Image 1 (cartoon, rainbow, N blue to C red):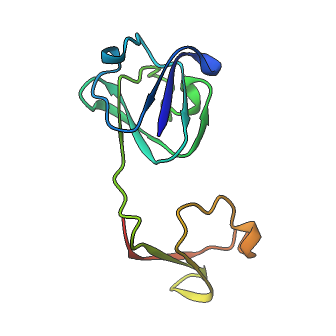
Image 2: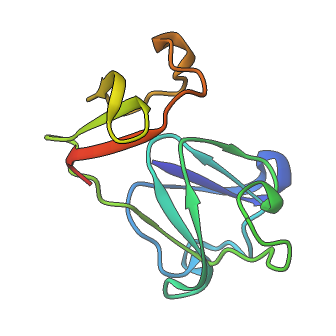
Length: 133
């Protein structure tokens, strides 16, 4: 689920979505000023019809356009759609050393917000995606 707000800092008109929206004006919004992603990830697009620059929107709060845009030239977001993930069967292995060696961590949960709790900190040097999207 994603909630888009017309103004910055989660103010003004809002629209809660669980499916794609090719044109935000269909929901009576003129622009997107802030975003809250409850579950995701989602793709945001600079123009209507899923065109233009793309922005990956992961779970979290985006109070201003520059918090989701990796480009400081575009403050426009006119369409959004969820990224389809096959969560029924996914698995990823993180390795401490290059070449898939050293300590290994297996991730099968949807979200791992911090590797610190698993003792990996900044030590991941190689990754194997075994299943899933």
